Length: 131
Image (cartoon, rainbow, N blue to C red):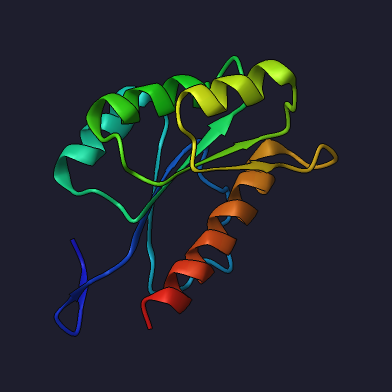
């Protein structure tokens, strides 16, 4: 766990693939990627991050299931669901699992790049909030 001047460094926990080239990720926000709901819950036992981002891109990444696992562990954690699958069913499931925010990923780019953009934007927002 890293710290800056007596304060805990803001942390984002992202469920999804890490970027191949993390260029542009230099910030005062710690970002950790996990590849399964189980890994996410394990990471939550060590420290609750300021923000969780869950990719919903079945079949490899089921963000709805990840959010369900998070909610069993922490009902109030802020969770962003990032998906390029916009449908009534996904929207209803997001509401049912109490997703804090839902963002649409671009459909013309790989999901890894879209997720990286969401993580980068969220990191910038957290950095601005904690300065």
